[in-house]
Length: 348
Image 1 (cartoon, one colour):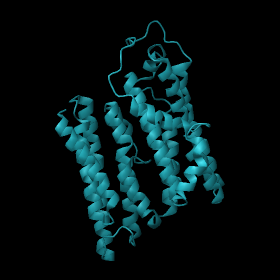
Image 2 (image 1 turned 120 degrees about the vertical axis):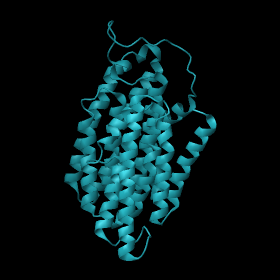
Image 3 (image 1 turned 90 degrees about the vertical axis):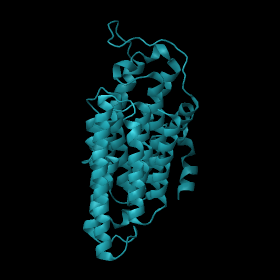
């Protein structure tokens, strides 16, 4: 892609998200979401592969549906209350429609079916943008309007997403689909705690972005898209294989890695709020996700690839891409647990 065109598209991505962040007016927030969607569509379709075009079409249709629902709901709310202000969501039907539309935008269950299919058709860097940056604007709107939303609806969305993300990833062999289900499960963790402690939602989002960035950049470095490609990664880059296994365990939420911190604090807060059954279901759903991360770790570090491998054996060629983003995101994804008290002090 032409670097000038790429610069315009990436600037538009940033502009759309910033516009949504800064707005308290529904029409301005909707415009930000639309700029965001229209900026990523050319990035998704840039390879002109039939799968990429199919993924782009699916993404565009779901995002356009969600945007139309947001516009309809905010217009209904303005019609009834006389205000476009986000903080004045007096109509319960409009606020329910808006949360459903935003859930569709970020891929919360049961509106999650588009996400694995879309992510599977994209290259890894565009998939990284879709899994991290594209979640920011809708999540900002959800956090801003969370007080007007029925708590039962938020809890249901959170529980269903965590369970769907865990169950869906169990029988996958494609790494991008596994990361898509991982994204759905992490969004569920953010939703479940939103009404009780929004600062923990922000903390979970931050750690999720760093862990997912480390996972996607590692797969990009090793050009891996399937589990059986991972089995041959150790001969190509033993150090990267070791850190990748740790990043995956961090995504699963095992101590003493960064991924344990948000899960631990969220379960602690749920227990404080007298919700032991919800906390138990969330902890059990985390085990489902942990299973497929362990499966990836097992394929990478504990198996030797068979002699009759279907894919070509990777050569030790010099990497052409920058290693600094991967190094930084991996370090953060592995080592933040000891500074949990400091992060909590900053968050509260």
